[in-house]
Length: 89
Image 1 (cartoon, rainbow, N blue to C red):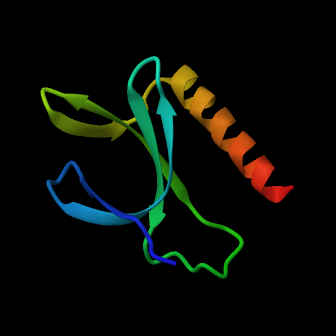
Image 2 (image 1 turned 45 degrees about the vertical axis):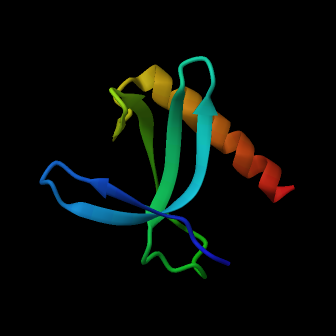
């Protein structure tokens, strides 16, 4: 299976590649939430560290940033928990 790879530039202006797991879209705000993991994660392990960042377009450029609002974070985490619960059925 082919993996989707995204590149994120960190605060030190370094480009880091991650494997995209899924995208959660908020149609009301036009914000996308990128769910991704380290490329090197062992796929045979039961535990995987996931990262979530918000993505939106501003002046024609895609902006990816951390979720800093606790309420927003909790909403996205609840959606993600629901998605994983469906997969486990």
